[in-house]
Each structure stands twice: as structure tokens, then as C-alpha cells.
Image 1 (spheres, rainbow, N blue to C red):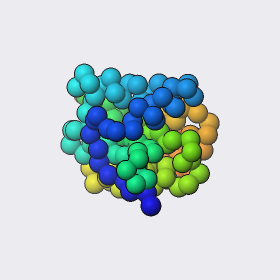
Image 2: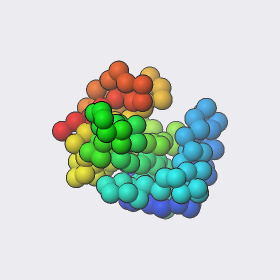
Image 3: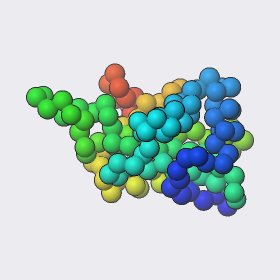
Amino acid sequence: MVSIRKVTLPLDGLDALTAESVAQGYEFLLRLQAEWDSGANRFDGPGEGLFGAFDGPTVIAIGGLNRDPFSPNPAPNPAPDAAVGRIRRVYVLSASRGSGVGTQLVQTLLAEARLHFRQVRLRAVSPAAARFYERLGFRPIADPDATHLFSW
């Protein structure tokens, strides 16, 4: 049975997810680790969190929720809009894809986001990821900083 819970780094098993993602050409888990280590992003602001999906003790997926740093308020206020969240750094171990764990993880992130944000944006890194998010209710958007939006 898969369980999803809030996590912090270091996280046992994250190295395996990172190695697999890098082998597939995705470097965002390397950025996750680097940003955590530097303190640039620890998913610890209001409404934020980093979540892991576990099959027993083994982490099989990870994903985070932040306030969207790329969603500015209308001019003249250049600060990010605090009511817009961003789903980031979602990765599911390839052996666990198709099992529903990715859906369960993103639904957990959306449930958390709904408590704090009026909408959530993200950047899908591939056509398959775009289709996945669209099946979950995200709609494509034309924005240089995001590919998809979910609103309540």
C-alpha cells in the first residue's frame, strides 16, 4: 500500500530517484537537492510542502508545492502573487508509473494547495507529463513561465 506524507531532506532513497531521472534526461531532482542544500527552497513557506510517496519504507515518488515565484501581481506590484501555488519537482520511479501513485501524489498536492492558494501552476517537461496533468484537470496555458493551470 502506498502512503504519502510530508518529507524533508535528506531522504533515504532520493538518490535512486535522482539517478533514474538524470539517466532519463531530467535534472530537476538535482535542482531540488541543490536548492534545499543552499536554503533557496526548502518548501517551508506558508502553504508549502515537499511530499514523498512510499511503498513501505521505499520512496517511489516525490513532489513539492510552493508559492509560485513566477506569478507576478498586476503592475505596479512586481512581487509574486501569494495566492498562486506551483507544483514542482514531481517525479515517479519508472517501475511505479501506471500504478496510480503519480495521481495520488498530485491529488495530495492539490488538496494541500486548495487550503492556501486560489490556483496552481506548473511546467510540464514532456508531452506525456502534459497529458497526465490534463487528465487531472489542469488546463494548458500560454505563459513563458508555466504550461498548465488548475483553478478552483
